[in-house]
Amino acid sequence: MESAIKTLVTTFISSSRGKESMDGKSFQKMVKKHLGSVMENTNSSTAIKEMQNGLDEDRDGKVGFQEYLTLIGYIAKAVSDSKSASNAEAS
Ligand SMILES: [Ca+2]
Image (cartoon, rainbow, N blue to C red):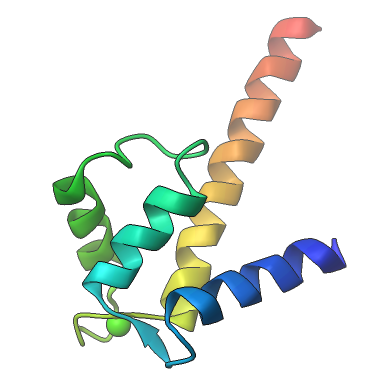
């Protein structure tokens, strides 16, 4: 658990190169590199751009840490839902 949280933080820092937010290009790279196996459409730059727009609450065109955590929350929920579904099928 602790190492997972550290991974989330270090992934953000390395993707944003130490800045407060990831720009569009950094976000594209981060999603393709780190989220390809848990998300659909990560090979589509357009889909990633749309996702970025959806996350961009403060409308600065970048993905800040809080917005990044929102994305992680969505992914965690999706993983949780798929696990619940497969558990339901098994029982
Ligand atoms: Ca933003």
